[in-house]
Image (cartoon, rainbow, N blue to C red; front, top):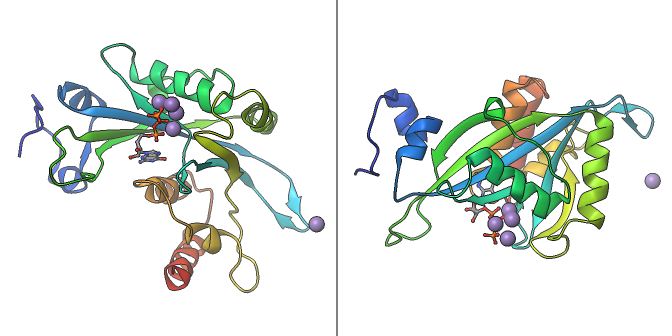
Length: 213
Ligand code: GTP
Ligand code: MN
Ligand code: MN
Ligand code: MN
Ligand code: MN
Ligand code: MN
């Protein structure tokens, strides 16, 4: 199957997972594009004064009841991927965050929503590290000035990265429902950026699969 790509020089591993480079993605003329970003910060805060929170990762409860990252549909014929993502962040978070090409992590084909749908969706994923105070400002703006607050976005949520006795924390968070491949974007980012120890992440993933309804 061809998606109108002019160059197909990705490795077979990348192709198998549906991944493609930013340039290859943009070369697909008939594709739709969506850009989302994981904003995160380090923190010294401790839950109950004893459980280190370590990092703040922002996700959102969407209008459809699913968890996802801030961002949305971008039209590359009118805006760059990054300026389109910035526009979505203004709508959903209530402030303009500059996003650059260096923040880009990967691009991949979303699974077809229906077998007959003709234009495929490519999702572009970005990660941006901020200061704790900047993250707090995002949370304040998202709950007050954001145009989409209470509409497309029901609220911002932080990801609990710790595991409590009995399995609460990250495992419970991962057992919720996510839009598209947002869950794997989260898991891969936590691993890649070393935000959670691989062993702990593995345990949380195993536990979340057991508890998933
Ligand atoms: P509208 O303004 O109503 O069009 O919404 P939007 O532009 O904010 O689009 P949205 O954020 O819903 O993203 C568009 C599509 O991208 C969704 O229908 C999902 O298929 C997919 N999507 C949404 N959030 C995520 C995410 O966090 N990760 C991934 N991989 N895909 C997502
Ligand atoms: Mn309390
Ligand atoms: Mn939006
Ligand atoms: Mn959105
Ligand atoms: Mn939109
Ligand atoms: Mn919208």
